[in-house]
Each structure stands twice: as C-alpha cells, then as structure tokens.
Image (cartoon, rainbow, N blue to C red):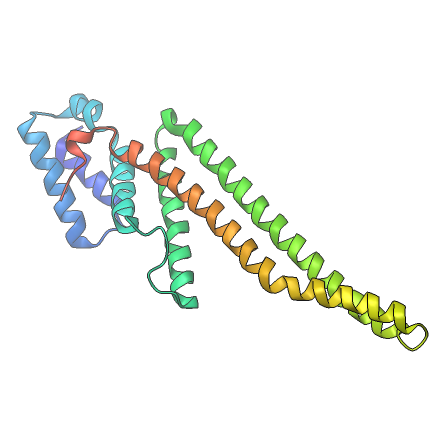
Length: 208
C-alpha cells in the first residue's frame, strides 16, 4: 500500500476531529514515516492498519480532552450533564478503538463487564432508595388511616414513616455519592486502558 493511500484512509477515520487537527496529525505521521523510511508492509507493521492508527489517535485526543476532569468544573445541572456526556463519549471512543485490534478485545470485554456492573450498582442503589422512600410514605398514610381508631398505633406508625422519609435527605446524597464514586472508578480504568492502547507505539503517539 502506498503511503498516500494509507494516510488518506487514516484521514477518513478521523472525522471526529476538526479539519485542522486532521491535517496536523496526518502531517506528523507522514513526516515520521519519511524519517523512519517506512512504507508498504513496514508502515503497517510499525503503525498498524489505517483503522488501528486512527483508533489510537482518536483515543489519544479524547483522553487529552478529558485530562484532569475527574469531576465537572461547573456545579450546575447542565455542567454535570455535559461532563457525563463527555465521559460516555470517551468510553465509546475507547471501545471503538479497542475493537479495531483483536489483541485488545479482552480489554474491551473487561470494560463492558465493568460498565455493566456499574449500571447494575446504580440501578440497585436507586431502587433501594425509592423502596425506602415509598415505605416511609405508606407508613405515614397508614398511620393517618389508623389514627381515628387507635391513636397510639397511628402515631407510632406515622412517626416511623416520618423518620424514614426524613432519613432520605441523608441517604439520597450518600447514594448519589456512591454511584458517582463507582462511575469515577470505571472512568479511571477506561482511561488507563485507553492510554495503554493509544501509547502502544509511545515514540510516535505524542503528536501535536
């Protein structure tokens, strides 16, 4: 494969980048190929197929954009949503990059397992919190219904319900913090795998 065709194919896989970013990274690798006298099978052996190289480039750019963003800088709801979308996009980019090389399929499967486990944990936490909230509400309703017939039982049952509902103001923030912590652990693992993948050839991945 001629170098011009190789890098044209690489560029086709870099549509997520801006035109200027595409030009910069293609120019970097073209100059590297010239300096190292790489072409044909040697070029593919050194840099991988066009899809594999593009995958490493996209992962590297995504990791740079997400660097040092363990938490959103903007504490508003919109800021948290934008941060979450960016993290999900990073997961998607890393998975797509790993999919381009069969050697990295075990790592991709491991990320998927961790992602599934994170979702399960989040769902379980939310379901448990909602269950206790509804339990408290029904306890209050039951206490009010019993109150005219047996005020002692009604007050006791309603009091238990009020305590359970009141605890929600403490438990929900704890639950949210737990989910956020698990998600951050997932992202650290994804970024770790992403760096290993994008820096496979570390001497040629530190492009501009």
